Image (tube, rainbow, N blue to C red; front, side, top):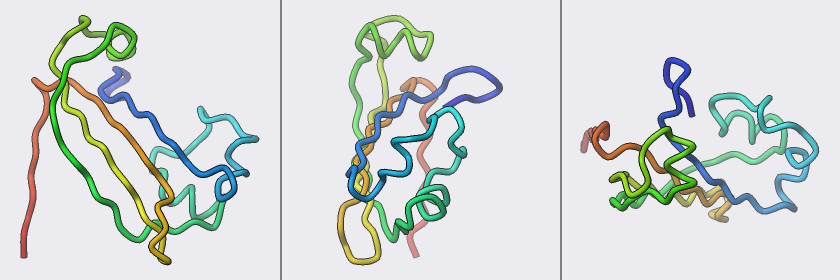
Length: 109
């Protein structure tokens, strides 16, 4: 993911091929910025809920290169599991970004 043309997040996604086969034939560079509307439109998969686990680590050399940071730079790590309307896990995602730029906000009602 880019912010003002600069890489700010590195995301790795795992999607079940049987549910997301239409995406395997396309170019990921052409995907929308928001993936869940794309999943619904292209694959008929509607994400109903997601669970995020937030932690911290350090970037490996390849990860750091993608983010234009130094190897072993502190990073936030967000591991997400997303579920469809039937409760099936349809996405596993790991997102990494610069820990120094990390902000977290939550509203509990």
